[in-house]
Image (cartoon, rainbow, N blue to C red; front, top):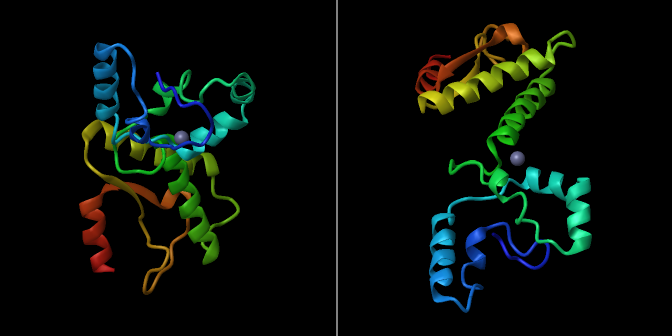
Length: 171
Ligand SMILES: [Zn+2]
């Protein structure tokens, strides 16, 4: 499918769009249409670096197999406006929330990591199923005026983005 010859040419499929010049004009048209349809698709940088570090990736690199050929279908995750795939995007949200909570000492040692992540995965599922933007919200805000909540599984809830905006206006 992707016929890029070497590594790191570009992460975007469409930059290879003009490279194609197949002798069969029909095949040429097919390829050009294919790449036009995938112009807004991106490869998740985390997935790509995982692949490059994997045994398969290293072996393929030695053999000179282009990085897109075998894995392409799995890498075209979504057309959403996230830089990463949904899996790694969610992981980014989990890590970001944790980092912000640690910064202000709101992350107790006893909070359950896997349960917190579960909430974020649920949020992803709800968002993709209902096509409404849901967000993970701290019931008692971490930086409230009078009270300060904690970053743990009991203080998390999934609400829609609009509700969340309304709420943050109140506090
Ligand atoms: Zn990814």
